[in-house]
Image 1 (cartoon, rainbow, N blue to C red):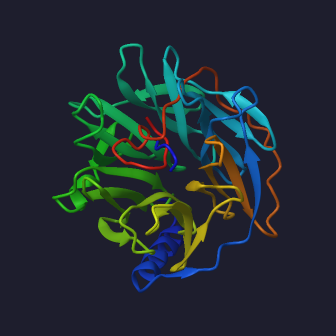
Image 2: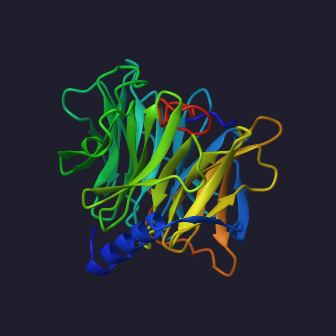
Length: 334
């Protein structure tokens, strides 16, 4: 298993339509045809996770299993360090069309804090009264999603949230009151939010929140499903664990879900998707290395690098278990 770690009316209608289709009876489809490029950080080839991608093809991620160091990536191989100033570790998780990013960092006292980097300026983003925060996605209005906890270690009492201009919204309040932990992991420009919650300590279920109406995402009937990203077209991505305990990535479009694993994978996470249907994530190989990957749908051209300067400098990161703290199996986040 892998180590764990709202704008136009048209966009909103697409998101709602996608949800209705999902809930109307989603089925598993053939594996989607992707051209896959694997990504390994040049000085750290054994641990790279790609976590978010925008429509320009700029990617957010991090490398380093022991000491996480954030970056942005312009394909095919131009990495730019991005770490919260003065931090001990950083993971860059979400990225929007303007290159603004969201993620989290561990400070020198060992506390985990959320952050955004908008217009080249870092800002720490922590919900008041909490002790552990992670931001996991950001849309083009700079609204971010993630979770917080009053547990300094972050392994319990996780509550999904959204935040914009310092105002926090309790997404967890929309979920079953008995859930053990919850995380909001992605948001599109229509404000549709995806994530997952733990019905029990050993199970997880994906969810989608559209204007306060929540639907469950569990297309393969798995005891462990997490939904980790959503595009403006309503496409969702994540991972699930099959009956044999093997972890697979999945994509979902218009109510049709496909399982996908890159060649050589023993466990897969798909963590981000853009409006072109490009996906990013990571997988474990037979040697135990964690390898990042980009999947481009067949027939889709890889975007040319844009002129806007990439944001970044620094270091940091965290292990799969932490990033989405409290889950088992594959993922990142510390």
